[in-house]
Length: 143
Image (cartoon, rainbow, N blue to C red):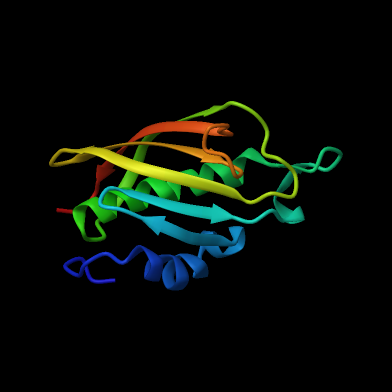
């Protein structure tokens, strides 16, 4: 995607992200606004971290939130811009419910010339009962 084109999150997920790590996770686009994005991963046995309980591993949830918050930055800037995750703190509040999709919402609440600040949450159907909260910073690696 050229750096000067408007960023289209739905197209990004359906074409580019689906060919990489997002494709392995089954990443899906849900919705977006001026400074936020919502993505989901469906429940899949290959993503389970504890076979006995059927609970999803934390890694796929972290990857979902990393992508949702990254996309919120690109949406706010209205363009893709290369960046590196400086810090992404994840506070897990409870396990994901076995059999349910996990929805991740990321928000970019501040941009500087070189750093973006994000926050978000993951849930499995009820935003009032989150699985995890995230807060982080990304550093731009291109002008």
